Length: 171
Image 1: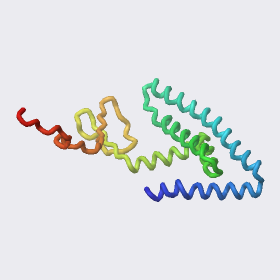
Image 2: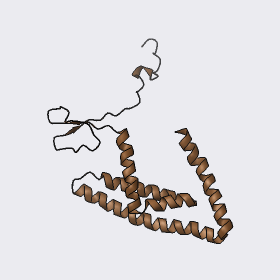
Image 3: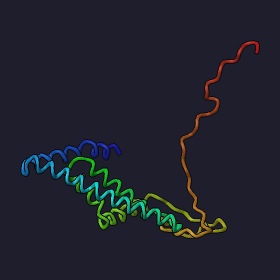
Image 4: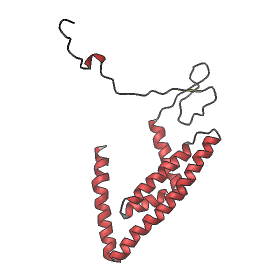
């Protein structure tokens, strides 16, 4: 995890800065700035448009009584694309714009679903409380399906650990 954070906050800006310097050396300062601002403006327009579509898709799914998993994942990817577009640089702008194009976003969704399927274990139980077969992330719940999950919280301090006033003599 530390390596990824290190790469994110040090290596990515170094690569972005070197690319901007190279592009600025070949195109000039004003065209490079126009490129950066142009991709930002195009990205903001696309993010707004795609984000509203994703929001309407989530609302339509909820109205129809469906779980809006795909629409929410689309919204998350659109938000990630918008954040990448805010970050100055050529590579982050290219990746951010790519995430705002629906066919490219579909490819990212497939990879994210596969990644999540490896890390999430779903067990479904039938009406009698017995497992309804092999646990798969694509298990389709029925009206009688019981989904079981476990939330892990940090342990609470014992009640005796709370400082109390010392006893008053003679009371």
